[in-house]
Image (cartoon, rainbow, N blue to C red; front, side):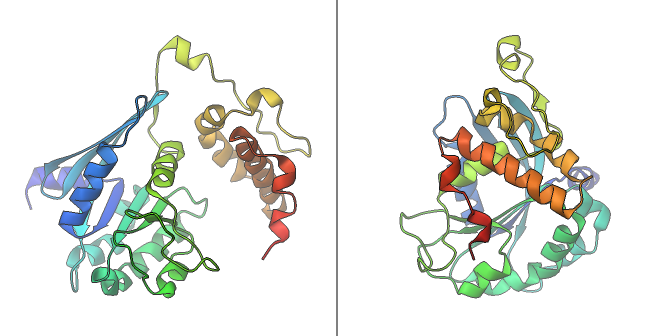
Length: 266
């Protein structure tokens, strides 16, 4: 392996598993996402290594993505799963599944379990993507229950209404944009930055002030929110998460009574 390739792989923070042609189609779909203020760029810089740049209204972010092909007995999957220093840098994984390659997904179990154990604060953005309009066995959905589940094409849910349904492509883009990425560089434009007010993340029984009911403010404070929650015990973290969730719900136009008692539902 060339030295430059080794350097690039040390900087990898995003992994994408799937078939080459489907991943390339997926990357193009992301880049062509219709938004005047948020842009995502994915460009192959060397074999299976991509620059992954988020250029949004409020922040910039440069990441390195590695594509890992689905194939029988993939040595690269095994080497990644056994390399904890490498996994410590991983902020997100994408898994693209179709009718044929889902049988290989079991190879990722060890890797996914390690990532989940190393990221107890759920700091890793994990996304399972179905690339075909089909019903993949339900066990696949249950195995990766903590993943954001997306259907890449088509309009209808890919699973029964009574089970976990897959979200659409727009939801995935929103998930990428609001994720609490490490290494974000805030825009220096004073007109942009003065819109943001620091959210008081002190956990208490009262709701956040109305001035903070703004999705963009919440998004820009995700890192602080996550860091504060790490120092709480279970009950405090649960209450804090409920408070933050309520504010997200309000920021998108929801009413508090619409989600009242949601935690009691099975």
